[in-house]
Length: 377
Image 1 (cartoon, rainbow, N blue to C red):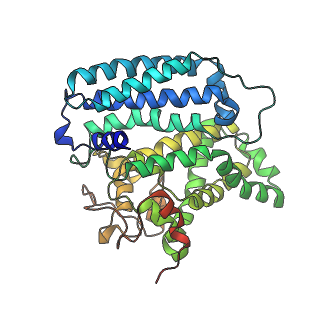
Image 2: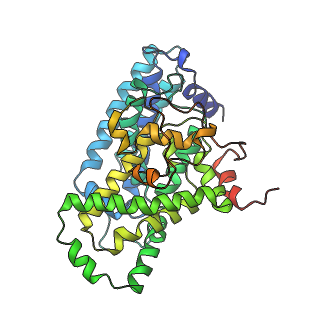
Image 3: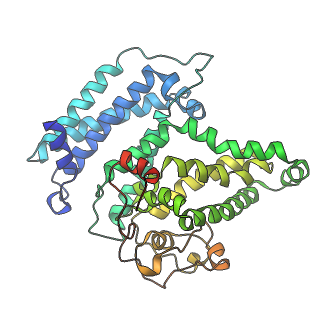
């Protein structure tokens, strides 16, 4: 526990004590590289358990093996650099140890998925893509273009949010089943043959835009219900509990809310006969878009903010200022907030503070998971 405590203390070192050239960045990245390498090794040993079928094409292409080699070589170089630069060498030596361990384990023969995949799987490879790929994209731009310059990359409660990403990734199969259940039920109740024939004639990118507009309309009202119905708000308050927003905060959602939100908003997408490729494109766009609007970015988009949800628009939704309460429910198109009287976006201002008014949400994943079910006075 002593080593773990020292590591966490190093990760959360204040910005003033980790200037460029101090070895902190290289040491932190070497630890991340070592842990990522070990997770990839675990996937290679147990592919039927820890890989998503949708991502199997990536593993079959050899990209996983190439990525592992690049990650371990990069991690080794970063660890050595950190040991040379940093006075407190715990990050560098830990990163070096993890990289060497992953390298030794990587020499063992891995397994190959057979023709008959087991029925239950956990998306560990999906988690790696979530954290590593998305993190490598957003951490640098948050560092160079921050809305709040005093906010560190590893802010308060970052560990809880990483765990949220882990749970939602590992349970992706369960969440997909729950998300598809309402659409399957509606398809069984109604006949959409005529609508599907018409939609099949629409060009690909127009289909993507229609999916975005239709799902955002449904999502607007579901989102608004989570704010106005007290029982539902107890679930959604978890998502609003961070007092600092960044790309990681997008993943903090209660399991029940994820299932309900995805299930209800997916009904138009999966019942009206859209091209599967258009649906996959939309899912990819909305994943990165959701992360983007939560990010700690200072960018202003001028006139475009009237037509598309931007980080500043969504930050006002997360604000705890009086003017920020129960506004800006849309995820893609602010027109819905204009139409239904919930739009709020001052010319250049950002909210002064974030979080839940009253701060009644406990800290820690499991306490937050149980929070909506506990009786309150």
